Length: 582
Image (cartoon, rainbow, N blue to C red; front, side, top):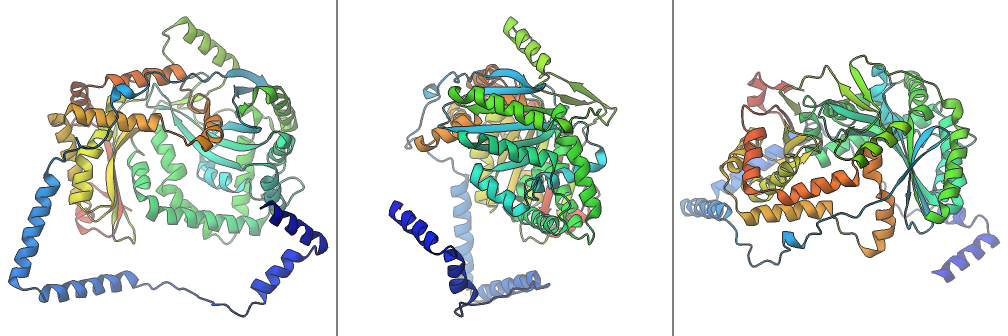
């Protein structure tokens, strides 16, 4: 490869227009080409359904009575085989006792840079610096909230400072490993109705490029080019199209997000920022002929979000480079100091917490709380007026299959039942729901998961709709009846630990592990001590505790749940007044 690179450099030196000439020869003036255009057919689905029905009827008419009897008997045999308990004893497997009982501790240092809280984490990054910054949404007016994902999508792609968007993109590729902005909704670990909201700035670079990376961020903070109308229009169209396309690939995620909307305040915000509500909103924005109001909105959002008074930062790099990185971060904060403007929360029904609420179990914990209180690292919001409620929503979409979810309000991360619900979700997925939803029901997949205080059932690319909801309820009855073995429990524990202790290929250990080290603490306030407590609860889960949590949280009458289905027209649901049809 080095010889080829050297030859390429020499060729460029001899002919600076070498690449332009190649593009002209192979692309622009190449007559060997095919131009293909595609246009939508409004009755495509109807034609497809008609063709399928005709093909089916043709095959049925060609069957003799004995053929039909044979097919029916084979169907019964298949059903019987699917209902049998499979013998997995012949497969090699780990034992729960093989799992490491403790997690490695990740030391971090908490400090400030020009008054902004900073978490420093020394890691063997092999010459890289990883930068994260969380900017709070607490002061953002309600009418701007729907625009935040669009702001995140475009703020690093519009140009900034003295750079147009092409030059900005080139500098980001030359000087960094990428610069991104994304929305963050972090449920509190102790209370279901408490959460943190913000946008996360992420980037990395080689140590020698650190000044350049922070200079790019400074230009984004101080002078983003939101007034480039045509560039914004392209990005809006791309964002709207990506969201719409995402439904067919991840429809079950949209269904889960919608199902959890009315169960927790964090779930409500997740739907606003990343659910079907955001898809519909971006569709409307993409159809606007005049984007001037959108530009004004993005400028207003920038004033609230890119404000050092609402920020906290995290740095991961080598011990040798930490002091220089801290100095560069300090310089960056001074460069963006003009963006400081104290703003108050816009809603009166919230309470702000400046510390992660953790149990006062030891003197160490008290010191930890005092430390975080000094630096104001976290600002949680408690929604005082939020009332969880039941809601069933159906989105009629031009798909031949369904994406289904039912979510149930349960407990937060630090609750002693959380671990049992995690194990129960994995066990129900493998031992009951997979067979019912995929093998018998014909869906591409389905299962249950626990997270954010919600126990969520789901299925994707599912030919059934309300029948799958019945399968979810049968899964709860199965769990409450205790029809599972200790081997089933151990397999579920191993599955959970495989996610908690995800193995990383040796070539990725450095780049991946050092990047995320300390991020749990930085993003959600979940400390190593809290992770270890959760780990010990996972080990301690028993048959009895699984039955108890199924009865306590998942049984009819004990639960507050939300349901969402995305799929084709459904007359039965349309006639049912308990459903809201979108």
